[in-house]
Length: 250
Ligand code: PXP
Image 1 (cartoon, rainbow, N blue to C red):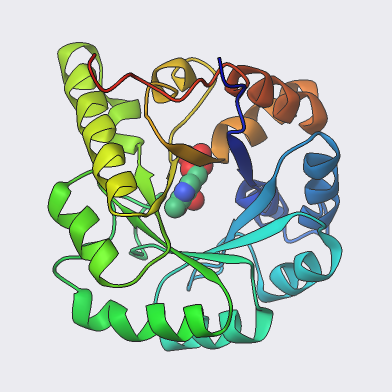
Image 2: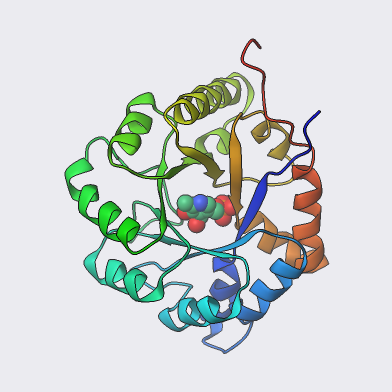
């Protein structure tokens, strides 16, 4: 049986959330990123929000200089943020919807409804050399629109599944599995993220064709208890069980 080569991108936004809560210069996201990398993660993910509630401009540029794995910038398509991305040159960008009042990214991008607004940023960022990903809900029309926009990759919003229980969770997982198959058929790299933790990762690993999971809150929360190195190692340990997800016939 094929060994797992599922990748982990660790979202370190909430290291900065703790710093911003007191306006201190600690904890330092750059130091956290180093520990995350030494623990074996495959990339560092940050969301430079327009309201700068956690990660700041200086953080993304310092991370660009310091990290040896991949830098994945989650971002809205606001012109100011696109300009920063073009100067920063992250390895990957993940376009996300953003609303000021939300606690975290709620729901995926409406790639189908906003294709005209997204086409420019997708092309500009691709041209700058970034792998461009769209953060979408697992709806067939969103997958089709993502492929039509010329994105290389997509990230399925797993939050609805992670919040659901019982039969609703089973239905959400089926949606994620079907959408992952469709995305793979269309030649898109399949990533997933949002709300993943040590108790639901087993079900997430039923998704086929997974390349990368982007996980933040639960790893930073666990790091408070056991340290960042251990928190990342524990998640990688769970991910090592990945064998390509639920079989097509199942
Ligand atoms: N992927 C995307 C696109 C996100 O917006 C977020 C949250 O910033 C994550 C992954 C990580 O989600 P969580 O912090 O719930 O693990």
